[in-house]
Picture 1 (tube, rainbow, N blue to C red):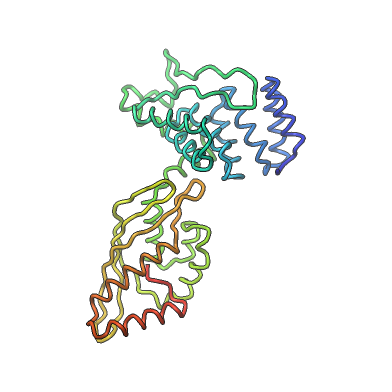
Picture 2: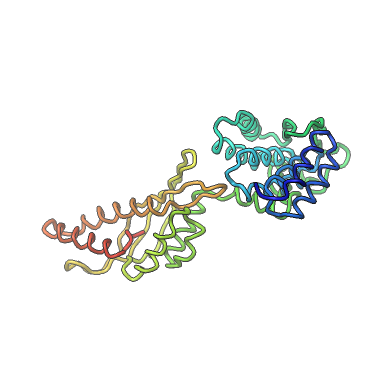
Length: 332
């Protein structure tokens, strides 16, 4: 494991002894000595959340998640901190990621159901989550809004419906910094990513595709760059419905390609119905470029074949196969 082992383990021992304030000091020292120490950030976030400093705890736990995105434990504890901070949406997403990474994580399953139930019911105040382990200290009292003087961030919440609208904004203001970026990260959707992907394809800015596509897409992106001149140009697009199933999503899109003249047919626009296939990597939706290209190729060939006389379809198939074999990627 990364980091100054002595410092962060000393902090954990203090947590177990109920010496939370001293533990926080030791763990802060550990994160300062080695900012890449996953354990120090995680246990610091847990300790801060236990002492009512949920916003600071969420920020520290976000750092832990960024250092080890595959950790279900870190995501679960991040969800607990966000839950205490009043962000049920962020908490539900964090718990969902924890369950996705570790389907046997019973506490994350229960917490996810709890957060989702409150979201469905429109509840504003989070239930107090179980105290994070391994600390032996008693859980902190529930954070309640002052009855006499409401906090400035929610002073305008004079009705239930208006308060619901203010909760996400208040969470961003309270959490700030990296934690606010975390909330914005959860706002990413398959539709948003698909739109960014198609926008980059339309502008032929293939270098912009890397952060939008899955990690295994780099060689395909390089292929698009080298075969740009042979690609039918994407002139416009419309993004349609999105469907999600677990960590997979499909966004239906209608695109218009500028088809060059071929087989005696004049140049013309070509409209296609294309699915953009996405997968969830960590906290973000990414385009699976290989699967999207495969679907695009099928749709392109099927549509173009309808425009070519039957006698020339074999010739068309050979021409398309030859083009792809020379490094041309299926049209997007």
